[in-house]
Image (cartoon, rainbow, N blue to C red; front, side, top):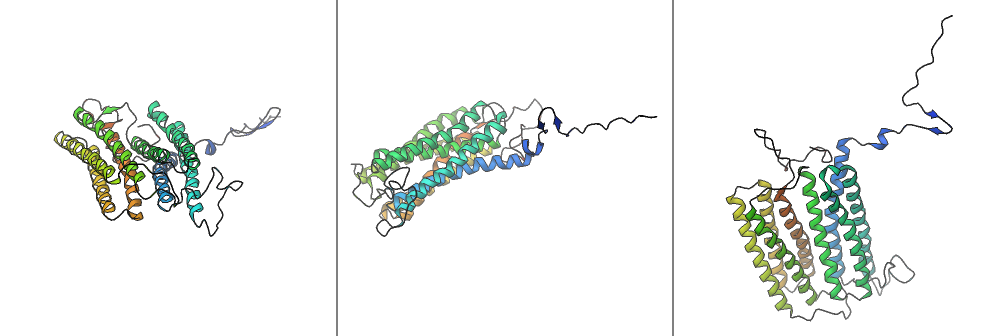
Length: 350
């Protein structure tokens, strides 16, 4: 009598060895390359937008006089986490608490950047993964300083550092975005060495411009609260003039950098980033002068804050474009594809 063999076990059949187990579903452990690329782009771009957004929400707190709308931290009021509307307080607690809530959004994207960088972008090297840790570290530092700002009744010695960390995080976020769309090789200079000798002083002066901007704000009328708040004891006109001198030095360095890049016929990404920074600087200067001569109206001050965030991003974007991470082409090989073209999946090694 012919015997029939048992049917072969399905490769996905469950195994019974004391307990019920199943093979992992690849749909749960691996995402399609295009989906990974989109999620990675959302994380890094979202981080950049959120870091700019927290600057604007902080500006709204200052310009509406809502800095002490919540008297404690992390609760809005003792024994009360969220704000409640009262005729005496008005909207101030909600504006202040909204700024705190946005910190959660920033933290979400900072964590997302960390996860996608270590999970899907390991091929971009150790330096990229180290940079991906800094948004979360900086956000935690910001939260701590924010608590001290409330405890110290908006003392300008704490308010200014609280702001200055944010442009640094914006700059870092911009660098991560540039690195996402460039290559995966070693860091190489993409412009003449003379360009770097001008760029590094330019970046330093740019940070000085931001520092002086916070000092000017600290001497002005927008203290962040309608009450009697400590101001920086410096003549506002003198502070504004010193700030303007730093801007003039920055513009001179930027003009020198443009000349070097054009004479060397540098890569178009670097030249484009330099001209973008020119546009941002001019727009920021126009808004700054108008707000100065019109008595610092709140809307123009808010636009100037937005300009400061974009100014920091522009400096960092330019700096990143002066380098490349594209692999060096072999002799006779075609030049590497321009980083201006977005890859379908930036998480894959090129």
